Length: 364
Image (cartoon, rainbow, N blue to C red):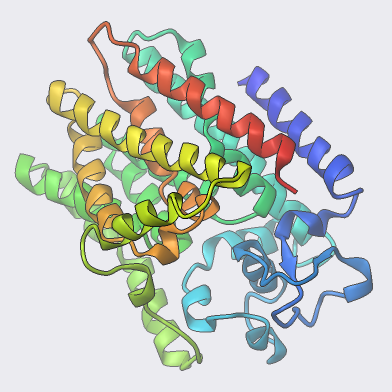
């Protein structure tokens, strides 16, 4: 973990001082097309002109005002009700900063940095239990989505940490651990509900009564929070209809757009698209080959796979989106037990490392 911490801190400082000239707001990709949080001063932040911005901007607006005390906070959100459902990351940042709005952006970046280190730690525990060289947990640092999320300050790293913690709890008969991970995960990102359903289904199949009880308790906070958001009657888009549609239609559209022109950016897009398809394929193959040891990964991967093939071009259109939304599939690959001599993980993680380096060096 010490080596991982050194690498994460070095890259975070390089971004902060090198890419963003010591301005922490550079981590949030604030665009000029949407309204700003009333707590941000335009002259003191980095604004990417001509851009809509990215999800980190939305999380920052909520972290600066998680109780919606200023009515102008809602006008700074593109889909207020939808954004407000993902409350845990901004609320945790607010709490760690003790409500100090100067410190909040730093806390958000710190949470993501610590999430990376925490993920390395959990994967290292899996490696130790499976008698795999612990150093292989550092493959996690090759995942492109890790650095994309760190540079954009979205909630995906925290969500992934909670998912891996939940899987760890399930594999080692710690149902309360699983419940905490999934309970907080569903408050962080709604896609963790997919993992909750998958683990609940496996628990029902194996008649793990204690797990079932804890899993049912785990979903209560998210259920109550969503009811509260509905009660507030916050305006804006509350569903995900534009993100999902007919199976494989979005993938077909993606395939057609890839060959519409040839450029350096398009070649990188092809590389990233081929990479995530390969990761999905490898996870499903390993789960099929070694069913007994990869049960929980298989169930989660199948549910994620259904979500992936039903994704529209709104998610699949750009590598930053699908690499982030489906980043968990990379972690599932690292958690899969592999007894074959085919170095699937090594090859794919090395290929992922090439993408990560390219992103860190060339993405502006």
